[in-house]
Length: 305
Ligand SMILES: NC(=O)c1ccc[n+]([C@@H]2O[C@H](COP(=O)([O-])OP(=O)(O)OC[C@H]3O[C@@H](n4cnc5c(N)ncnc54)[C@H](OP(=O)(O)O)[C@@H]3O)[C@@H](O)[C@H]2O)c1
Image 1 (cartoon, protein in one colour):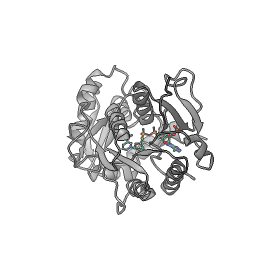
Image 2 (tube, rainbow, N blue to C red; image 1 turned 60 degrees about the vertical axis):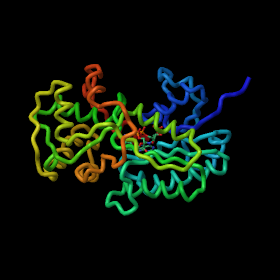
Image 3 (spheres, rainbow, N blue to C red; image 1 turned 180 degrees about the vertical axis):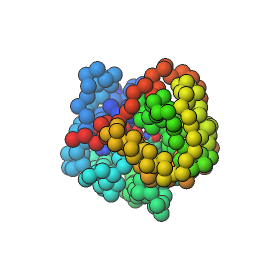
Image 4 (cartoon, rainbow, N blue to C red; image 1 turned 135 degrees about the vertical axis):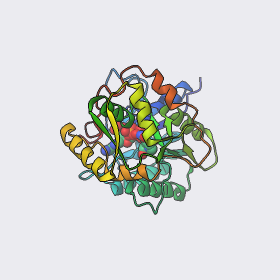
């Protein structure tokens, strides 16, 4: 009997990594995950993936040894305390270096659409630096750049829906005409796994088949969750102040200034033919009434300990 090939996926108990791991397991491959989390025994993948602690040191070599492909989702949404984009770039480099030393055949690196070394936004700049590090490593690689990822464990769309359900006035920053092009987490995982089996070095966007203006996108979600909130446009500074107050009340960072400005700059769209097929509107119609019922805290999920 031949032993199934092993892949390493970062964050199999988190969001995108979970769907990549599931797609690989469906193909009969074995999966090891790098994570800070101790698996909840109730998690559907708890007894289906091997777990290695996520430490950015020489222990990475051992965690990666024997793997065919590394699927890397590691990143941080914003800076806080000692968590910085600079550190995230260094950690990502350490991961790629370890993969090379461990003899990993290929790296699929999840970046972001419109990453740019000259971007005013450290998130997009940092992602461009990680892409460059991977290209310079000489390893066989694919760089997958999602736009805005939607799915059942998502934070962003869920929290927009939460706001629409729970606040009397929902502010749209600026003119609301800047666009978003959401891609489903399943499409994103499929695009990653398809990129993993290729042999050539590629960089491609993961984007869905539809685009909306941000205001229409918010109104679509409002209709889906039957929210009666008043949706109004406001200057970006006012929307940001409101988000800061909401963050204080919720003990979270609801949205950062850079995230809002990047959204307004139209960076959540792709300029390539879309590879995603799942329609956001269809997904919305099929989500049970749970969307936005509970607020999901980024700080609680990713910044504790
Ligand atoms: N979500 C989107 O809409 C979107 C859009 C464009 C690009 N992307 C990119 O897609 C990738 C996956 O995104 P995702 O939303 O699915 O991320 P995620 O699952 O929340 O996190 C991905 C990985 O990063 C680790 N991580 C997250 N926050 C961290 C923190 N503050 N400190 C240390 N480690 C942290 C997680 O660790 P644990 O395994 O320990 O939880 C996990 O392994 C990321 O590279 C992201 O930049 C996402």
